Amino acid sequence: MGAAAAVAGQNLGAGHPERSVRAVRVAAGIGLGGAAVIGVLFLTIPGLLLGIFGMDDPDVLRIGTELMRYLALSGLFITVALTYTGGLQGTGDTKGPLYISIVSQIVVPLGICAVLQATTGLEPADIWVAILLGHATRCGLSVARFRQEKWRRIAVEIA
Image 1 (cartoon, rainbow, N blue to C red):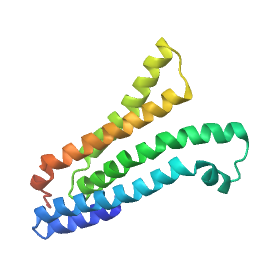
Image 2: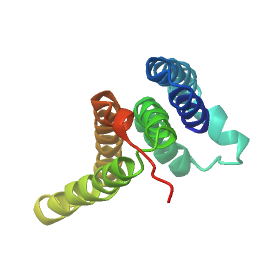
Image 3: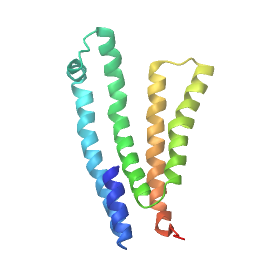
Image 4: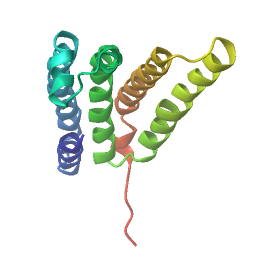
């Protein structure tokens, strides 16, 4: 996120907005690769990873392993979302990411949880799915906002 912000802002400031686009896309790809590696570890050796932190209770391992399955996928979405958020912020668009965060991290997951609680009851997996859908929403909205390229027209006036 920080690297994408810095590089996108530098390139925009240097008058090369096309390099800002490419830089954010490359940063997202690098982040996605790292998140994929971590996700594979979450899926293949969750017990070992949890054991590093002293978790050996069978119930904790069961719940932790279940959560790590969701996080393996969620990590892909949030990595791309945060990279594009950095790109937006680095190019001067700070309102867009704020609104996207409110919708995707508050409205979507809490809305899903409220509906489920009122209708079928709320289970841990429901909460994790709501968080996953919030991260997917943030990813989609952040990429879409960046691709609109409204940041190209942001101007700062100094009195």
